Length: 214
Ligand SMILES: [Cu+2]
Image (cartoon, rainbow, N blue to C red; front, side):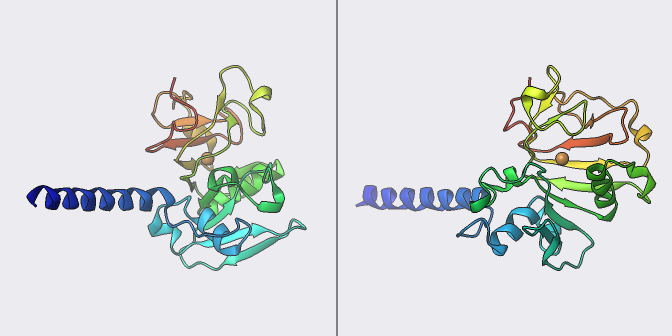
């Protein structure tokens, strides 16, 4: 009898643990198609810690390329999909939040991103440094050159597919002079060093899950 009781308790404890693990892994992801407003709000906003994600604005592009607001926020942070490639399977939407390259940024980081996609100097429109969270990582960049979309087109050893990170976009890129550009050091490192788009990548737990640390 004692043995059976012990067995039942053990099973109970194991199932509690599994439930906890699942909670962390799905991170509250809603069921249903990834094209739904509900899924996109979840996917984009969770690029930031929950205390920012809960109250951020969430935006997306409609089929004509116009910006639409999926959810109005209150904390000055905005979430969006930052992958310029678009979904590999447009009909079914982003495969996951990683493919979307979900990003949650403050107003200054959005000035930086707008300049980046327009090919203008971020320093001309930024008022101060900007911050952006990408806790789902990105689909890969050439660390030495902006706008390279495929590993095959990147310089030797310069390709990095990032896991979770925070980014500091400086108004004055020269403030990052002297920081390392080595993305395998584990330390914050500079991406696109020496260009108008130099920014600091700050790796957090799980950073090397897509591309092992060398
Ligand atoms: Cu990033």
